[in-house]
Length: 293
Image (cartoon, rainbow, N blue to C red; front, side, top):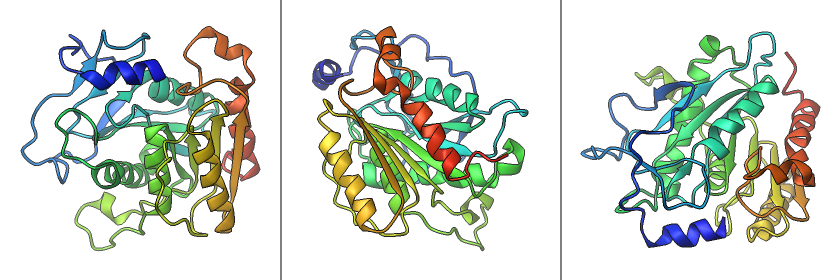
């Protein structure tokens, strides 16, 4: 992961893919008439090829934020759901490793998944901010999932957020902010709460966390590898949640590095202890009663 960050830091220009990665689910725009703060931005998004050391797919230059819908089979559905924020250093989003592949693993657990394509603060020429537009996209996604919960077979009181790396930062922001919605809003989605019911942070990029954490932060599950430079910050955030009097669980594995998603970057992932973290997440959700049908 470190190699990829160094390589991509020079420039993402000239590496646009001829065709986008074919996400398998239904795509839903968060704001069909245009996202607040993106007025006048019409440049198309770009899928990056050639500048990365692996076969995973990355997208950048996002001005029309969206979610892609992945629903479990009806006979397995538990009613629980996640909005998933892929990582990518706020420069791009790794849409398969930390998005679609995660969604498929969650579907196997009977959990609905909505892969977020949010605006990016560090894309070339970006005027967005992670703690403004990017987190607003995640909050809007939570509202939409709740608003369409009957259509998608979801319990609107069991909608969580999950984020990886930079996406973990957005998930933490969403967990600490959130509001009850506006009952008089013309847009039905805006009447819904943006506060997630639980949060999962995968090796979250919260090294410069400055927000206060209160007892109102939802139950939080954190996973990180000890040889990841973000491990100390993840542990500090866990302690902050605990000190606030909220529910938290932290898993730190000895090795595995950064950017592994739920399925790993190589076949070696399956042989490592860190590959068990989805099982630990399942146990945590079961213990909280989130997987009761």
